[in-house]
Image 1: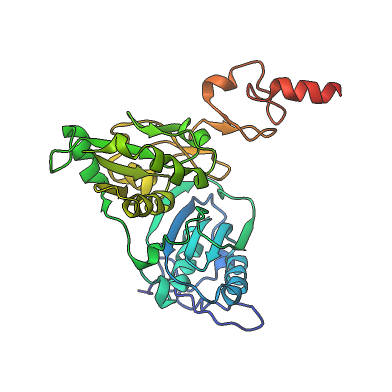
Image 2: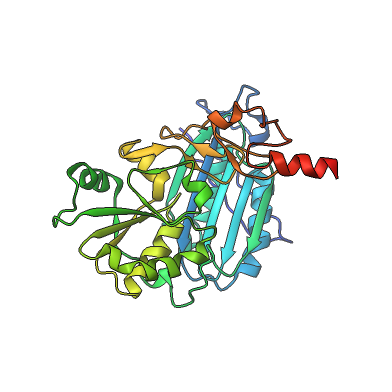
Amino acid sequence: MAGPLIATAYNDGCKIHLDRTLMSVSTTTAAPLQAQAAAPVTHVNIAAYKFVGLDDTETMRPQFQAICKELGLKGTILLTPEGINLFLSGPRLEIDAFMTWLRSDIRLADIEVKQSYSGEQSHKRMLVKLKREIITMRMPLIQPENGRAPSVQAQTLKRWLDQGHDDEGKPVVMLDTRNAFEVDVGTFDNTVDYRIEKFTEFPAMVQEHQSDFDGKTVVTFCTGGIRCEKAAIHMKNIGYDSVYQLDGGILKYFEDVGAAHYSGDCFVFDYRTALNPQLEPATTVQCFACRAVVTPRQQLSPLYVYEVSCPHCADKTAINSID
């Protein structure tokens, strides 16, 4: 029986060549990627990140662009001196080929991936960007690649929330590190939400409210783990004595334990807008005009006109049309 798909890559005028000789179906006949059956294909959507020092992002970018083009993947990859963050979508074989190629870099060999599925690619184009930070916080002393804050697994967190305290008997407080419009789509029950508009506002808020958490265990969380990892490190640095990050964020929590202690869906930054606790596309949408989140109930409003306006921007849209 043929082995798994193996992707080998090298820089040849920025072109990536894939070894397709091990591709097969359930027979011994090899088949190229282009010859896959025309039946509907379920697309795999992956999210992954790793804080690790990368000093060659300028060289890496054309290589990532080339292999993603070769495999027909869509999504966004951020390459930064502090690590990598990626969201990609494509058929299973192509996603597996990409991950084999990615993990051939020893620095990224242990990168963890979260998966969801959809009937079409979750992104419409492919971007590989160079950034200063994976997620902008403007706190240069925070270097996650030098050591993570303590993390809590989804199953453990559910048990803490079930019993109302952690294993040391301290009350558990959930702290949402996401932007306000994301929180409005769904969040943990009884969470602390500072209604921030961007992540750079977070450090000042937790500094100002530090005394609110005396004697409590704080669990920071976000969509996939990046923001809550940086948040927890910062909170440890300024003196919080009992703070954890939710390992893998909300999406990993959904995958492992479902909707327990969570209300609503989880906002994601692609055409699906939000995923429900079954990791399926939710009925929440994003307004084409103002980019606001529009819930199913708000979609029933006469102010919601597909690709024109929503209850958040209808008045402004009407004024602009008169002008």
